Image 1 (cartoon, rainbow, N blue to C red):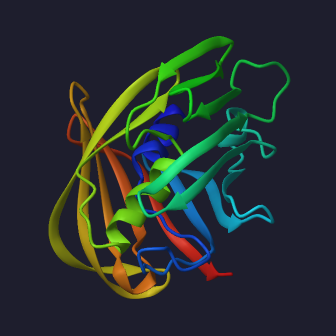
Image 2: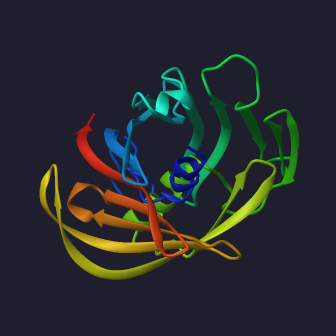
Length: 239
């Protein structure tokens, strides 16, 4: 299940928001469901929802619907939430929270981004977090929206920094070849992106579909050249 969390952290080509951005890029709210497998075994589904709340902030949530086997590790009550703002300079996370749906705090965490004081504070798995901010810094959920926003505004994501546990990690996104993809939504024209992190033996690959707001129709993570985690888009709905 940790492999799925890692893939989600690097799956930064999800999308979208709900209004016209100030620079003219139009983003849309959405709900998307992915079927997840790990080493060829079904791990259930993950549902993503991105909306704008009454205060004008953006909210991105992930909910799990694990298979019978995966439910031994992941609770159906688990939820990950990121609250952020989106402006001319892109995405700035404000709050992040993870509740693994189980008793105790081992799998839980929270972060507060204080951009005025240039500090991120919080606690992840009972360990304190105290990290200075830097331009473009994300949490592991807002990362997905930040990169998608860059693509929709015509900018390649390059290298993006985000907080994972108590450390800042950096993923570099590289555009690869275009491809046709057979999917539950039909045949789709996609662009392949790869994401890597220095010092890691994992590589993430995404089949991004411009016609559905740059949503990945497929994402997979490889470890030492072998595919481990696969996510396939099964449902997509604009809100």
